[in-house]
Image (cartoon, rainbow, N blue to C red):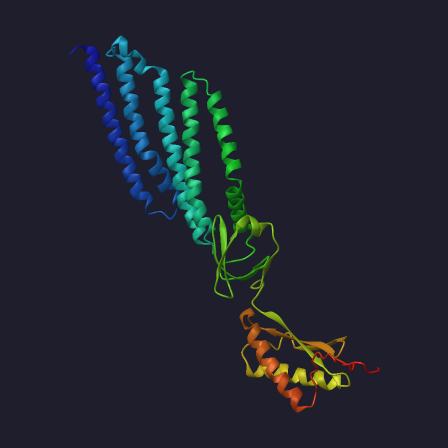
Amino acid sequence: MDNGMMYAAVTVASGLVLAGLVHAVIRLLKNKAQATESQLDDIILAAIGTPLVVAIIALSAYIALTRFGVVPESLAWLVTDQVLNAVFILIAAWIISSLSYRLIHGYGTMVAAKTETDLDDRLVPILEIAARYLIWFVALVLILSDFRVDVTPLLAGAGIGALALALAAQDILGNLFGGVIIAVDKPFRIGDRVKVEEFFGDVMSIGLRSTRIKTLDSQIVTVPNSKITSSVVINYAMPDLKMKVRVPFSAAYGSDMEKVKTILLEIARDAAVKTSWVLTDPAPSVYFLEFGESSLKGQLILWTNNYDSIWDVQDWVNSRIARRFSDEKIEIPFRQVDVWMRPAGGSS
């Protein structure tokens, strides 16, 4: 074996030994990092560990091949500075890609777990994939530039492709951005009762593309997020669950309205005592509002502690109104049409 081959072999062997030592040190540091509360040290060590070992071996091999004349001239292109730069660009992309993935996965998952919506849980995997593709695309462009390859067509093609994709998927992208806005703005949470345009019900799930609402008829309605962000949203569960209940009433002309109002307030107070739905604060109130065509009209206002109980309150109160008005001889008028028949051939 000539001196060149011997020196090259020693260099490679030294690189392998150094790589082994670095690998052992990193394993030791990983064990210590597991005992700390922070995830950052674990993420950094996991990201740089294997790529660093590979980089040491690659560098030792490059030195062995280029410094001791062991490579034939026909293969000299394999050990140029451009090849070395390409190798280290790939290793750097490997480290950055792994680091970004672990940071997004670790901290993104931790933050998403603290929120009530599942939108951010779905967003984290998309960010992981997007970061990886972007990093490796940049690495490819740098390698091609290092080899004096014109990357302008590639960048132009990527731009045109991204534009075409954006135009083809503008509805999807609009819904995705709408999902992000919902996650940030939080107009509602899972379980809230909402009204979006004509859709009324409880929010079952909040996804990246759409939100699902279960109507009071137990039907699932899937509403695109872009529609939600561009519509007026009524949330019946915020800031709290209590809800105003309006019970309209009418009494015949000639009725004593003060007596009517007293009876209605008695019914409302009785509802607060005998049911678990009606609140005493805010207190119930009665308003005489209108002289109708055939009746005197008004509203009894109560507050229920939960929007789910609106119909229960209305049923309970209306049943008592019908009974009390009947007992107190207060007439509840109904719409009436008088038809006069003129006898055939007769005079008016």
